[in-house]
Image (cartoon, rainbow, N blue to C red):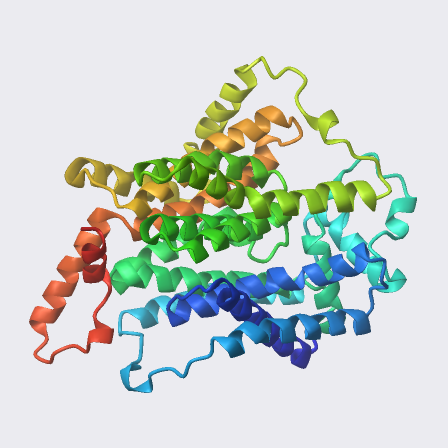
Length: 478
């Protein structure tokens, strides 16, 4: 392993992601900015080998390195323009005693995942017949369109996947280790940092740490923190789209609206069928615009803007790269169900998702008890509180969109089978469930009770920055 290369890549990812956040004018807490910057930086880096291929430039260590340098310098510009010295007088240590046991457990879990990424070769069969082989031969031949296409590929379609993983494998094979893969660890660690920061804003550390631990140990999802496929990264950016959509609905901040659109676009760039789910999300946005008495002109502007990045990235992958560059013939229309008037496969898929994937022994082995935790908390909120914040409504809508949308995708595209595509597609539902738990009325109330008991036992006054944000949440929801 080239340690220097790995460290420099992490620094590059952070600077690029932070620069993009500054470019969009996004302001979050320190932990959220750190985690989200790492995630975004990985996604931005994936465009470098992709761009070299689109412009017919040779993919090599020098060309990729220059691409990373240019990208990093460009992303430094908004950081320098918007740079402000932090107010060191108001800085305080953000962690409390409750945090350390959870952080230790998270560290153990993530360390095992990182070790697997570093030590073991690429394992998933979808990678070994597609992106991984393309990346390996790209290093030898200087192009993604290489010797792999000289063999018979009629038994697989994995060579027709978006270039996201192929590009990242090329970068990490060049500068880190022969197996690549560690870009996934950077994404996972960044995501966990971001989620933990979000949970601590609204929930007491005891509760927030517990629900995040429940999320981390989802068996199937944890396995894909070290087995590279498209689904984990897709779930990360799909969640980012919903999170910033919720922030826009509350604050009406246009910067957050455009960043939500961008995050949904990246999710579509990673898995193109996400386009269907994004379109299904549009009615939620239009509903809140209607409730705010927005004009018809603004409806159209927001509808076009919301889907702008999604359509652009879908067109770039499907119509430019796959149709224009990949030698294998691929016709999307040929993959679509020929009997769309027959809705029974749709209802069959929804039933199978519930009976086989979710509420079954197999489902428990795949996803643990996280779904049951979500349903229990949702039921408690509905019975005893009967009110939901805008963030909670967006999260519930997102959960329904993933569930119904995956059924629709299985109905439209017969190749999207239950035991593989749909099973991994459900990864998108878990961060949204976690987002709901972070805004659950019952969990926020329980956090408030713990805070009140804790402060009543303390004889020393707390600094303002040390008081958990559960009290601030109440004031936002009035």
